[in-house]
Image 1 (cartoon, rainbow, N blue to C red):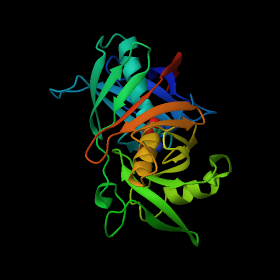
Image 2 (cartoon, rainbow, N blue to C red):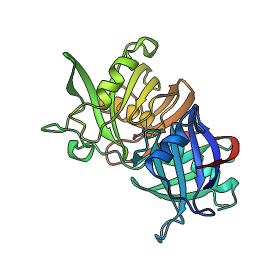
Image 3 (cartoon, rainbow, N blue to C red):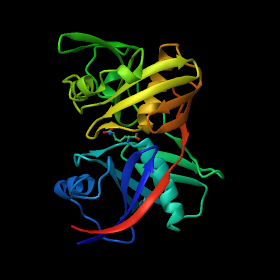
Image 4 (cartoon, helix red, strand yellow):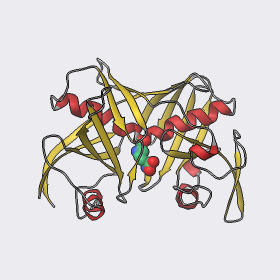
Length: 276
Ligand SMILES: N[C@H](CCC[C@H](N)C(=O)O)C(=O)O
């Protein structure tokens, strides 16, 4: 099967974007992993499939697959790349683009400066909705990891996130703790693990060990989760500059039952064809 694809990234969180509207696409786990493989395939953190939606409130659906082949609910950086992709491909000329994902309906706004604002929806804080095993909802939870007790925030942006505060992200034990948190038994669907350094109430530095992909240069939903957690700890203001290894996002959250908004860039790298 010949497959046309577009390589894109959001602050270095990179994607193979596939137009499944104008070509027939049916990828199995092996093929997804091959596409994501940085030596044998194209190489990416996630694969994004762009499809039509038969729902009245959006013309598009986009599906997200991690490098390990698993389908997931949400991808903040991917949503921005999706918006620029459908505009560039002439699939829409709208500035305001609703799109369905497994997490539900997102609204994307393509700005004049080329950046994209994503309404990521209302964060889910109840443990059962994350899902996370805890008796009651709390701003922080004690998580036992190999004899060490970590204090984490836990929430969902459609996909699950655990966030812990660290004094300095450059010396945070991401490689050691990331995999242990990702596969912790209290997260039955596994989890993305964020390591947040709070610089001041309007600025954080963040590294994310992503579920199904490992540490990435940026994680959009992870940036949103970190701001929500920091706000719940009364340590952050409503709008926060999130400094990731790949660059900066602006995230705002007005508080409980309000949506999280994220703004940042989306970059085209190259077009290609691959035989599967
Ligand atoms: N690894 C994530 C999906 C990609 C999220 C990330 N790339 C973003 O920008 O939000 C998960 O398993 O939930």
